[in-house]
Amino acid sequence: MMTALQKNFGQTPSQTVGPYFAYGLTAEQYRYDFSQVFDGRLAGPGVAGERILIEGRVLDGDGQPIADAMVEISQADASGRYPQTVAEAQASGFRAFGRMGTGTNAQSRFVFETVKPGAESAGEAPHINVIVLMRGLLVHAFTRVYFSDEAAANAADAVLNSVPAERRNTLVAQRSEQGGSVVYRFDVRMQGPQETVFFDV
Amino acid sequence: MSKPAPTITPRDWSSHSPYLYPGYKSTAKRGPTKPLIPLKAALGELSQPVYGHDGVGELDHDLTRNARKNGEPIGERMILTGQVLDEGGRPVPNTLIELWQANACGRYVHKVDQHDAPLDPNFLGAGRCLTDAQGRYKFLTIKPGAYPWGNHRNAWRPNHIHLSLFGQHFASRLVTQMYFPGDPLLAYDPIFQGTPAKARERLIADFSLDLTEEGFALGYQFDIVLRGANETPFENRK
Image (tube, rainbow over all chains, first blue to last red; front, side):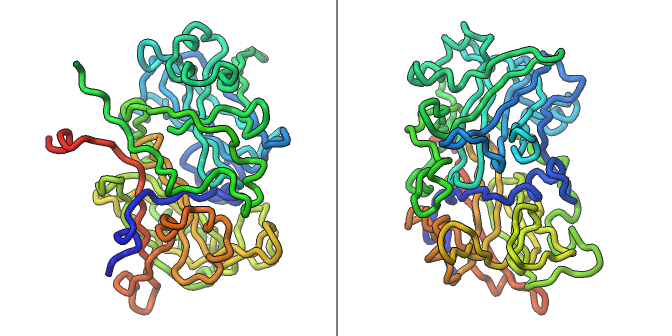
């Protein structure tokens, strides 16, 4: 028998993550009785680099924080390198990937604990890759976090330079220091005059 | 001159829904409105080899057993199996698949779900597995029920199972839903209908008597195609 796919080969279409993902994808964060594979901590205590928090909200077209979004981030380590094997990630404590829902924080924030990434190659600014998923988003959205204290590197970054100048600020997380922690604030605005730049990756 | 770095096949927008789809009301305030900025990333930069390999437990693929409290879950047992391929038809081995779904009555364990249908104490509705060396996966679960939602008058979601996959690259990430053949609700479901017509059929599993286990569970095959390496024929030959 010909399967549906054999008759019509091509990319499997994306569908929304929906409102009920939490017990499947972020069970421990939401206190369901199931384990989770990913969390908001990308770097264990022994990982080299500047320890930072990436904190923000996902805002809808009315500017309201969204409490049923899920945010995933992926980044290089402080030397600009991704772990290449499971063994390497386990040995170093750097997982390169994090996932958080926005439904357990009173302000609908996501908070990632990580180290500031290094540039992956010369001429490229340090950045974090971001995936945003939620009810009402039929295809997940890709964006990037750049860093406000990397002005010179940002000015030379080819990807940032491909973005209209007046929209680049939507990709730059603002650095502050709060109670001994370095916090980068990054809000994702799905719509509106300050709509975050989303990429066709 | 150095060889250009291999890239990943682009998102085929003729296979995916638009961000703003009026029939699905939640898209109106949540879908991006400005054009996406093209970002042609090299594969190597976004290689993601370390997902989930340390977190898949022995019963995680068996939703009929992974949440038992005092007996078997209620409902029709089903096997969900298939192969994960990239667009070149190559199997995607050793990749994480996460799954979640409603129970046989159409009720999710999620606290936000207030549908007036019973929870099943022996069924959570979440699982995960890794594909094998041929890209194949297999779950044992309970067929999910349809349930009402607030999108429009008398709106009901067709029976469906949510699936989340990574593939081998950051850009091959896919979150989708699998539907069942012959479901009359598909014609009325804006989430399914938002997908361009030519690609919709790829979201419907095939019922298979070959995969059905005598006296035990119905078998469904659902193959999944992810974006993959956009290799030239020359590179394929080595």
